[in-house]
Image 1 (cartoon, rainbow, N blue to C red):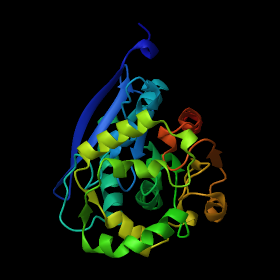
Image 2: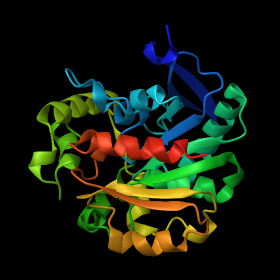
Image 3: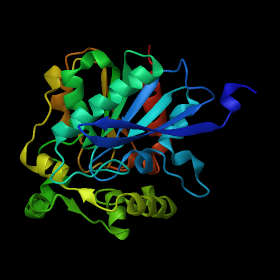
Length: 296
């Protein structure tokens, strides 16, 4: 049987960072050996597996990890501290701590697979701690894609500011199952959302994220900018959905212009918002990401 006809395999790993256990979910088709390695960095609310490997009854195409594995990548989705299956420390989780966790994860993966570099795709708040990691250790990243990257004047961040005191007071909050569906809406038309997908995500998130860190929200609302485009020297793509409420052309074009590497790309994908990878435009998004990382 040809490798592209084999089922996608999943396996889990653990990394210890500063005394905390970090969970990593891996997927590949056939054998993981000899494949380009791709790391997916989650956002500020949900961890790696439920973000990027969501199982939707009757709709198998929504798992970004499965799609990328079938394109020949060895794909890893870690949970930063405070998220998913990783240790939930007391106190607020900071962007710098997440950047350190990502560094430990990348070092583990490079040793595991015998590679010197990884590809890196970051989503939402993930673009902030991943951006800090890329700034500090560009030699470890071959190609980078920042998906749904926010900026200080992002409409959704402006709306969140009224909740800043709550975020500062409590390092974790509980989000109800209906609450997980809110990120599908915002500026996104109802027509680009599938209720079945929304339900599957909400159930998965509520099951795994029994409490969600508020530290990322505090950082995003009080410490922008957290990254400097002039110090991100690797090939970089900015990509977001047409209706994203944190990523838009007016806010991100100056950042894109300042990226020093001439190998860069700005892509807007229609029929999706902040949850683009789980909305109507998800197939177009998957293809754009795979093509970017397949570039020699």
